[in-house]
Image (cartoon, rainbow, N blue to C red; front, side, top):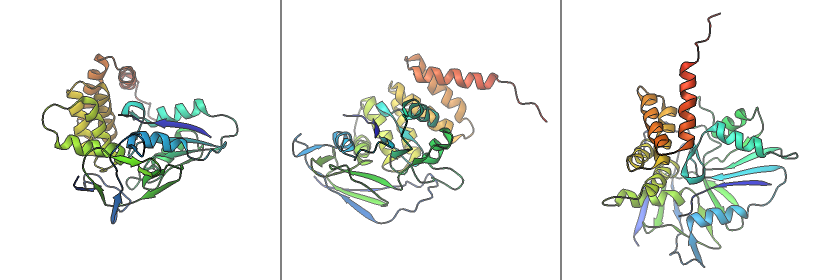
Length: 286
């Protein structure tokens, strides 16, 4: 099995409601899920980011499968450094890495197998189309991975945990993958004063992947961009281009230009691609 792991390594009760209501999400969310936590000590209790990385390595090998483990929401997947991965980018990575004998891709990414709204294909289906129909499977809910590499999904409307700081996971336990980014969103939301732009970006991922709230994710990425984060600017641009409302394309180009000026190569490449599209002649009428 070929593995791709895209992650970033970095007491009261907290109750969080998933789905802020700003997006039409096709899958109903119900009930509450309690997430066990512990105080990180590096031995019996590890950071959630480390747990996602380590527990993913324990997923059983299958020579016929390429597995992608990443943070994600019903709308998008996040790659290294919490940068949004466009479907064509992910498909290109998988196409280049595919070897003989591999017959499908499995996206170990929350909600990647679910259509986010009527008429919109799931991320798994979008990747499959980009790979000319190569089979791609996704997940049907919030993803959990155990220390033994076992996976499951849940569909809760509310998530409860002990404490409201960093999310620690028992070394022999199970990690609730979206909360590995979601806890950062909770902390940043309560922070006073300046916040490191990298944490703002991770908070944006948390709003998207854990709270299922794209509007708050976009606001956090824009905040990160204003604080000097090229990835924040880039992610804001991707969300605006995907949303496609009036003025979104122009705003996205401004964010891409800001990232490109800061030396961000993906932003510069996308700017060039958008400019080429704008200069392309309109198709002739039949």
